Amino acid sequence: MQIPFNKPYLTGKEQKYLEDALQRRELSGDGYYTERVTSLLERKFSLDKVMMTTSCTHALEIAVELIELKEGDEVIMPSFTFPSTANAVIKQGAKPVFAEIKKDTLNIDPADLEKKISKKTRAVIPVHYAGIACEMDEIAYLAEKYRLYIIEDAAQGVNARYKDKYLGGIGDLGCYSFHASKNYVSGEGGALVINNNNSYFKKRAEVIREKGTDRSRFLREEVDRYTWIDQGSSYSPAELLMAVLYAQLEEMDQIKNMRRKIYEKYYNYLKPFLKTPFLDSMSYIPENRDSNFHIFYLKFSNKEVRDLVITSLQNRGISAAFHYIPLHSSPMGQKLGYQTYDLALTTEVAATIMRLPLYPELTDQELRYILENTADVLGSCKYGR
Ligand SMILES: *Cc1c(COP(=O)(O)O)cnc(C)c1O
Image 1 (cartoon, protein in one colour):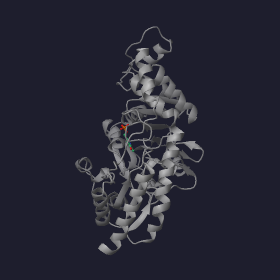
Image 2: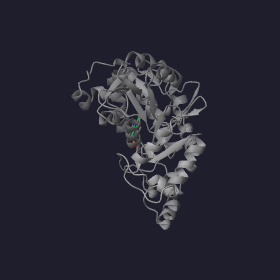
Image 3: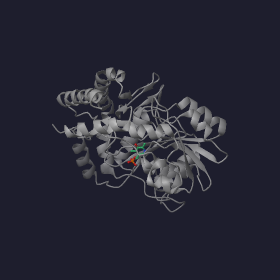
Image 4: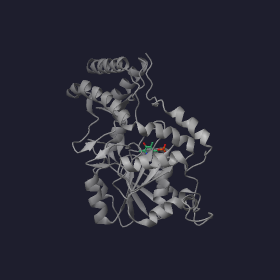
């Protein structure tokens, strides 16, 4: 059996909507399907303002431009994240400051976040790893106390909640990803969520997104032509991509439930192994949070065991995967002068974590194969080493 790590799920409606989008001959951005996905997201998640973008990376770039991040400013984020979180900050000439993560959720640790705040800190970017919310109450308290903006990197957090609020809708700004590796996909794609009721953010964001022009106002027939009014870039996704995404978002709860079932089977089957010496911890959803089941991970007691399990599973046709090389110890992090010995827990987690395949099309038979083989490999660790 060969089981890939991920398979983007298709609902079956994508083709129909694609053909419809082609027929409409509105191929550039901000047409019928962009409008459909935007209002669906706003309605479903009770969001004030959503702007579809070409990626989450680009949504993050708009977000830091909106808060006018500049040279000398600092932004606190976890090191255990994807490079885009830090790239956006560097692009503005500002400095990413890396905070430690928490052991239970692998999300930014509010206690370390507070320690990293300086006079130069302008914002914090909590990353909702694996589709499980950060400690948003504590982060909001600190943001208020030190007057920081909160930009949620909710790339993995679409359709997950913290208490009664959907992720991306809690901070001043939120960023979503619809990349093929995420739960709901358009191939490449994202969205910026504006929660801060500063109307300047909304006005400026639509200009930045439309190449520095007031084309959005033109499309709303508020002006009779559009022109260059500010700095901007090309961040609005093509209609074809939004047609694919619409098919996905229409079924977002069904997709979430299919993922939930797999997640729960992993969790229940593998939980007893937490009593064994080599398995340290695994995916965990705190009480007041609802996940979208983006990732299921196991964390081992050391790197040797982790690497051995990954290799053994790969030899049996199962693509298990490690995750981030922490940004502070990556080649770029080194170039920027960060020290590899910083952030002990982040470093340890990166060396000992393993993700199992998790996607709606995983069959019961494949799932059983993964579970039995994982259990078998874990069992052999006990005696083998
Ligand atoms: C996937 C991801 C991104 C980047 O998303 P794109 O849409 O591919 O630009 C950013 N941050 C995190 C945490 C991610 O997982």
